[in-house]
Image 1 (cartoon, helix red, strand yellow):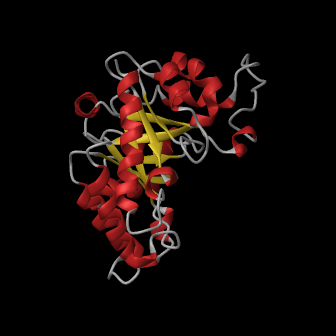
Image 2 (cartoon, one colour):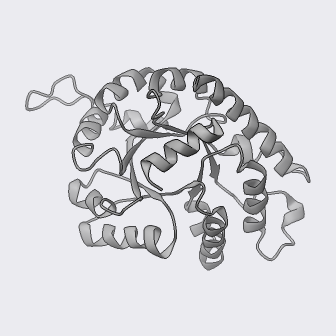
Length: 273
């Protein structure tokens, strides 16, 4: 999906919601466990219930890889079921030496029909570049994450070559953004890092951000939207996972997921005007 196609979807649906399919088999409603593929059945019903409210789905591959071959089959069926009208994210956090990254890119862009994959940048340009240059495909590079461990490295201050006072994540944003264009690179920026968003938008004024941390992790949709939306181009995909997909563990789980997703969509529509 190209940037303009994604922007058109956002305006059409008045939503920049991404639904995270962190489909932990130990948490899905028990009445689904008798299905041949409980995870796919769960995902299918969540997708059917929320597709009108969101523009993107993010599949956290760890919840599928942990189930071996059956998990991979669930993931492949899910990403194909989503179709082409939603931006599909493989939240896999890949990144390795060039020839290995090229195989990761092939896995998620060719073998599986994802539009994007999350990428760790800390091995440098040659580990990220194989994810670039694929028409309509994106590398979503870790910028400033929402977890407490962000303080261990990302928020540390550099102190060499005249860079004193610059944080490591700022160096990552400015350097990675020079490796490609805003048509193929996004950044992961955690919603719990709201204080940094004004600065982040200055460093990368045209890029899209994938923003996890809304809902269960306590990030503020209002605060993020006010600080990070680009006029017209929007530049945001805000992810909610557990708050939507596990809103209920009963027979009504899909209906409750739709209600929560609709609430997010309605709030987002206000920020788009």
